[in-house]
Image (cartoon, rainbow, N blue to C red; front, side):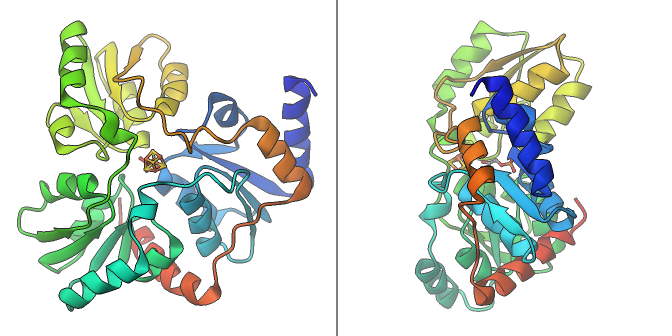
Amino acid sequence: MSGTDIRQEIRRLLRERNAVLLAHNYMRDEIQEIADITGDSLQLSQEAARTGAAVIVFCGVHFMAESAAILSPDKTVLLPRPDAGCPMADMVDVAGLRELKARHPGVPVVTYVNSSAAVKAESDICCTSANAVSVVKSLPDTKLIFTPDRNLGRWIARFVPDKEFIFWDGYCPTHERLTAERVRQMKAEHPDALFICHPECAPEISALADHVCSTSGMYLYCAKSQARKFIIGTEAGILYKLRQENPDKEFILASPALICPNMKLTSLEDLLLCLQTMQPVVTVPEGVRLRAQAALDRMLAVPR
Ligand code: 13P
Ligand code: SF4
């Protein structure tokens, strides 16, 4: 089948199945192009919670499809590549988190959405990189457990100096590949560019940035900024829409190492097969789902 035929067949099957196609901002260009909605983790979870479609096809990684299954239990959630996981999400497990909670009784757990449903179920509230500071500020407690991303946790902590954090030692291997030396070199090569990075980058990288934000925050910032040139410190998939929406501006990836292998797995062929077979379906056991939903609902109730 030619590329055009595959695209037409995907769109036809999406209509036939009453399905909505959600794609994360890090997906391959051709997946973002065909998606009904692209967005960051927060926007996609909000969309999953409110869509009227019977089927959600999630082009992202496993925890994102799980969040959709948690928030929309009456819908079929499909993840075209079941092997698309998130190494950061795998760094925290239920047993370890329970042990940490037992050592700090009464301390609420804030969990980044990049985590399994089972870990969310052990948490008081979730957050994404777009709403993390608002979520933490919404809590009256002065001591918090933050899991699993130590880099996002440390970045948030700067905005709430009155709170004490216990950080889980997780991180995103893709963002951690960006080094301060590389950023300094890129800034020296492009002195007229602004450097923007994701809070999943290590603290020494965020310290060098003109702006730190979620993937969707980058679209807003770059569109509004008077600058013409940007060095981008996040996963390469973000460049597709940045370049499309700002044809008069230049975007340079801070390092060729900024590619998440999991986010790059899903192809148009995988998507087509998934719609033809209506597999693989992502489900969450009801007992876990209800507790994870409470943590996600608390997050969604916090104004951004
Ligand atoms: P956001 O899209 O929420 O900024 O998340 C980045 C990410 O790493 C998702 O895996
Ligand atoms: Fe996980 Fe990092 Fe890939 Fe996002 S970019 S899915 S946090 S490994």
